[in-house]
Length: 446
Image (cartoon, rainbow, N blue to C red; front, top):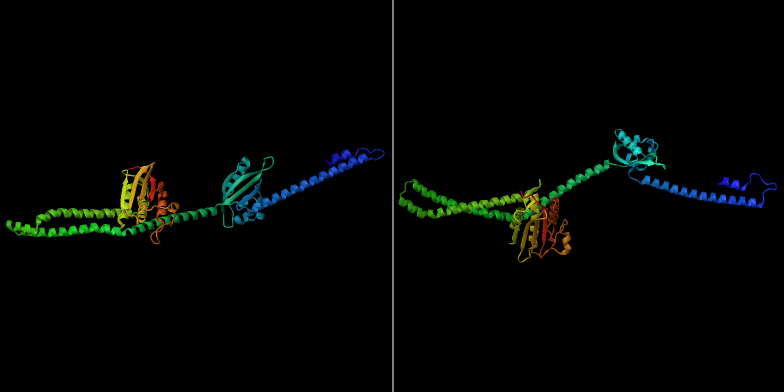
């Protein structure tokens, strides 16, 4: 621009009389125009310098604030820029890394892998991710590096940008998380066992009563059998001694052997029935107290509910009408021991809710629907208020008096149902009392 102005303002050869005013006016206008342009250029330059400085400060703050490693390499693999976090991650300050070959920061076993990845990005310009070990005072530290090409205005690669995060701490965190998860599962299993023991403790009185009745029945019949045996021994001793027919007939009438002979069969049947009742009670108790862990099996949900409900009923002093019905065998997949615990909690809660109900009734209905084995437990008690229905499955939530409930029964039951791939929830329609619906995967029925 100044050359053009000079060419227009000054003629090649000055006129003999010198420059006139018109020529000087053109020169002055050209000078003013040039000066205005220079001022404009200066303003633009200062503006660009301010933007460049702002960008430099921004990039500096980014490099200083990023927690992950950020390294910029030139075409030769030399560190051209780095984040301040390198000092924290590798104990290599930014000043110590600049100008150094990137290979010097990489552990020997990972250098080949890192070089291949960088060369691949420079050649294809496609970002990639590679896991390498970088050197640190404590030894090789695993890093996951994302590598992207750095190109100029013409699109030619000028180097690469590497960003990465250490994997060692992440893996240690995952290991701690896994350990915490195992501890949580063990604590949950312990809660299930404790809740089951608490339920069994509430049933001890009923168990003792249930066992005492058939045992007493067996004892009474064996006592009668002992008396019958003594009378028959007396009679057969006289037969062995050669007593006469008339004497034996009289002795038979005196000992009432004909009546004892008729009662003998009844005593044997009664003793056997009592023993079988004891056997059934012990078998139900064994199945009820089973831990319930292990493989998922195909079982009859209706039969499992019957055993659990009967045990709760045995431990209840108040008479409660309990009806249980279903569509034949209701096959389900799960762990019967844990499902029994769920049913016991539901029935026990229903029993507690019916404490002030004049005609207490509990209905248990099992059926198949939409590929699920379903069990509904309904009572005719006061029901659950609408404002409390959303909280019934929360841990430690209970409406019972202090000391009469832990508030964990429904929460644990809900968790057990979810672990089975099913659900435990309130029925969609709540009638006079409360209705809970347990859904489990349907079994094969085999």
